[in-house]
Structures are given as structure tokens and as C-alpha cells.
Amino acid sequence: MRQILFFAIAALVLAGVMPRVMGSVGNHPAPETQQPAKRSESAPQTSANYRTVTVRSDRLGHFQVEGAVDGRRIDLMVDTGASMVALRERDANKLGIFPAARDYTGRTSTANGVIKVAPVRLSSLEVNGIRVYDVQAVVIPDQSLGTNLLGMSFLSRVRRFEMANGRLVMEQ
Image (cartoon, rainbow, N blue to C red; front, side, top):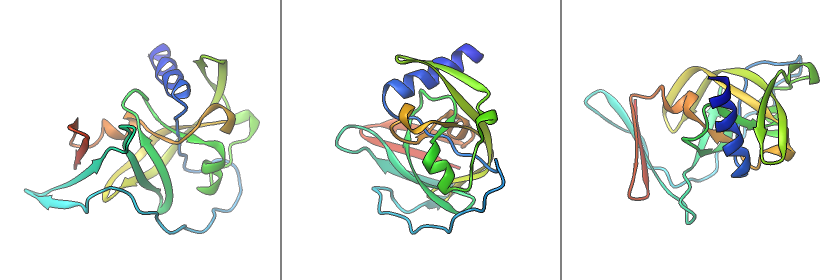
């Protein structure tokens, strides 16, 4: 299992995209909530007691979403190859997550070698109205991760997600 996680994180790092969000590490105050940026997401629709969100891919075929960790905004790229949500260290800091050097207890292999990651748990992560509680994530040094990643620790906990024809559909 650990090797699979390392491989998934390594694949994300190689792609230059791998985020991680965390609940509370360190004793620093949380920053103020930022205003959300516009994304190519549809407004959540509710039918048959389920909330459905559709996201269109960007010109490169990636699904960029705006998320919120405990109400604090963060941009993420959907990565089904990432086993966990992965956050750049500076973005984690903006969320009030400040891992100390001793918190980097996990390791993952990348094309550039082995890097340390700080495992964290997010009390909640929401993407356009779809909210998951107690989400596993990792914080990765900025130089090792190009963008925050929305991995399977979030996606596997929605009722359904599907990618086809340049659209990502999530349902909860």
C-alpha cells in the first residue's frame, strides 16, 4: 500500500501537479478567507436527493477546480492518479497549515529522487458544494510540486465521479 501511495505521489510530482491540504499543524493563526476565482464549473444541481457538479476540462485536458478547506479557498487540479490530496507548502500555509520540519515523516519517490511529505488530515474539503469530511492529505515542499492536487482521498468518497468527453461529473 505504501509503495502504491509513493508511486501515485511520484506520478503527480512528475506531472508537476500534486496538492495536499491539512487541518492543523503548528500553532500559527489561520489567514482570512479569500474570495473565490471564476472556474468552468456548473452550479451544483440537486436531483433525486443528490448534488451533481460538472466541470469542463481546460485547453490541456486538465480539470481545474476551486475548493475550500474549512471555508478557505484553494485551487486544485483533479488527479485520479494521486492517492491523496496534495498541497504545496505555501498554499497549505495560506490555509493555516504550518508543518514543522519534524512533521515531514512520509516519503515518496519522484524522478528527481525521494522527497519528504507531511501527512495531514483536513477536517473538511468542499468542491462546488460537494463536501467531504476528515480527508487525508499531504503537504509537499513547493519546489517538488507545481500545483495542488485533488486526489483519490477526496474523489473516492463522493457517491460517483465520472470523466468523459472533456467533462468531469461528481455526485454526492
